[in-house]
Each structure stands twice: as C-alpha cells, then as structure tokens.
Image 1: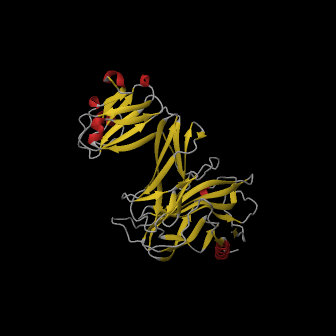
Image 2 (image 1 turned 45 degrees about the vertical axis):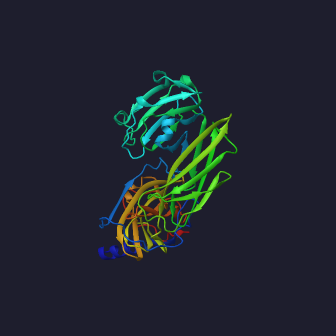
Image 3 (image 1 turned 120 degrees about the vertical axis):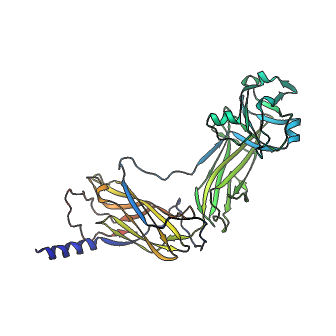
Length: 414
C-alpha cells in the first residue's frame, strides 16, 4: 500500500470515529434554561482570546458533585440604637461562655471593650469577673479576624452560667450591630438550599430546622428572605421546615452572590433561644444553553457541543472524561476547559482531552460527565449535566502503546 493510499485510509478511519449524539437529559441536580435572555454586557474589559487546556486525573480518586453548603448556626444578630444600649439590652444565652461582638454601624463610634458592662438577675457583675476575655478591633485583626471598623468582642465568664444577661454601653453614640455566638450551646439552626446554582426564573427551595443536639425541635418561629447583592429582599415563607420562592426573572444582572438569610426562635425551659443562619446561592441570567447534537471524535477525544447564545460574551465549557478500565468500571481520567468570545446565534464550543491522559488499561467506552456551560462575563453557571454523554457499550479497549487505526462504527447512545 503506497503512502497516499495509507493516508487516505487513515483519514477515512479517523473521520468515522466522529459520531453524533444528543446530550442526556438534565438530572435532578442539573440546571438547564427553558428560555434565554439577551442580557447587556456588564461594564469592564474582558479577555476575548480563545483558550483550551486539559490535565490528567487519578482514576482511583473518584469525583462527585459537591452538595450545597449546609449552614449550621449557634449565633444570632440584632441592631440596637444608642439609647437602648445605654439603658442595657437583654442577651439570652443557652450555654455558658457566650461571645458577644459590638460593631458600630457606620464604623465611627469605636467600641472600647473596657466600657462594656454586664449584669444578671439585676446585679451588676464587676468587670474583672464579668468577662473571660476582651478584645478591640486592632487586636482582633492582629489575630487574623476580619471584623468591621470599631468592633469589640467580649466573652462572658463561664462561671456566670447561662440565662438572661443585660449588656450595657453607657457611652454608646450610634446604632450598633450586636452579634451573639454560643460555641458550647446544644441548640443549632441548620439550613440548606436544594441547589447552590440557579437561573433567574427557577424555584429556590430552602430547608431549615432547629435542633437540640441531633433532635429536631417542634414548633417555634422560622422566617427568611432572599437578598440580592444590592440589598433588595424577597420573603421566604416556611411551612413544614421548607420554603419555596420563584427567583425573579430580573434577577442575576447584579454581580455577586445572593444571600439566603434565616431567623429562628424557640422557647426552651422558659428561656428564649434565637438563631440566625446565612448561606449563599449563585443566580444567573440564562444567556446561553446547549443546543443540538454533540459530535464525539473518539480518535482525538474531542467533544463538539452546539451552543445557543442570546447575549454576547465570553463563554466557558468544562467537563470530565471517564474511560473504562479492564474491570469494566468507568473512572475519571482527564478534565478539560475551553473558553472563547461568542456572538448571539448558533455557536459551537469544543472540549479536547489528551489521549496521553488516558492511562494504560483504560479506554472505550467513554463518558463525558460534570459538563458545565458558564458565562464568564456575567460570572454564572448556565447549563449543567452530571452525566452528559455515554458512548454505546462496546467491549473495553485497552490503550495500546503504539497508535493504531481506531475501530470503526462505534456510536454514542442517548
């Protein structure tokens, strides 16, 4: 066989490895826009040059999608004005050694911890015996704590036990944020969003429960709100420990994470127990989505994915290649990312993996997992598939040391 004929045969063989397939449908934890919006470009300068790279993974390490953040709170916050703090405010504690932070709202009226007074059952506790430790803002920052300007922290001495205390700052001059943290309390508020990444128009679901140790506490009060980066709030109405809210369609045009804020209250043994919890969610305007059939080039280990783009911007594609081992089990062998600037319309993004990243003993059938489409200009996740493409189940192929002509006729299943 002459050189030209060999080249032709190899080209045909390589071409035959490019197979078309549809993306698998979204799973329970996936995001996929049902509609797109033509969002304007945010201000700023953005990189427009395309980039693509891949790196090898340890197949034995395994991968999984991280669960949404579970917030666990033994603390609460409240705001008071100068007159209230001069008279004294109640601080309810459920365990000894509560830590209290006072922070002036505008940062100008710095709090001197030596001027803070505390009493219990109508009796003032002399300061040398009232606090286990105290610190001002400079000392806290020197210790590595990021606290607001003018803050001070005091920790109630453990010998004074728990219950209701009165906290007083006779020379208070402003509004103050009061933060009470009980590190040794058995009462904890747990809260978690069902998904950490949402699209405008999706439904946010939040579950929350107040517990004593591992036991949920019935009754009590539970409220919440979703707060935008600019401070606009949307109420969360709880029933049965869960709240659902349709994220406004106009959401997602503000840079930054949205905050889920929860407030819980219980009366236990005649004493008040308060807890506040916070967790963040990413909310993105749906500016692009996967669209059409995927082309998989098995020889080049490249996936070409059509993308429908509604808004100009820089879009990123990332995913993980799974290969089959001699034991028939699919394991992660490589991750790849690619990004480029796209104009509105039907566009294409490719993920190229390196054959050298596939270890000896691993090969077809392949899978594409943990696929994500991101809008880098607006800092959001648009479309995801935990399992995106699964190659039709042929017998596992061990990667040879020397290159060979790829096997013809291997397809991809939905």
